[in-house]
Length: 76
Image 1 (tube, rainbow, N blue to C red):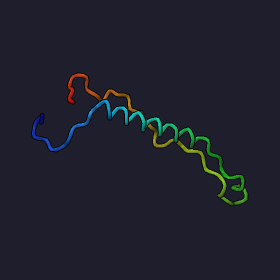
Image 2: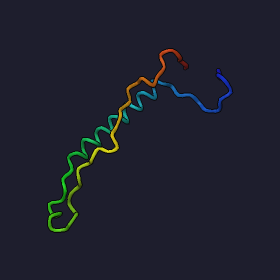
Image 3: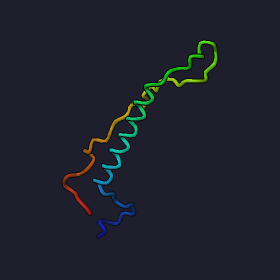
Image 4: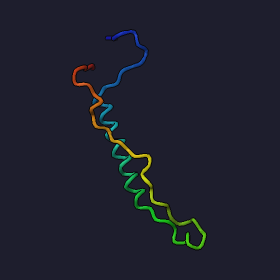
């Protein structure tokens, strides 16, 4: 069934939600890993090698909350 005359396909909301939640988990894992960064022990003598700066968590991340899905309009 085609609704209207639009040219863009619709998405299956629950599949999109599952994908978005997986992306959220991956981003949260990267933020947590990045927070463990330590500058190089050699940085004090002018060598930047051997470490990473802690991730500043910017831009701020807003996780998927599911409110984007309509409870009144459903397709399959």
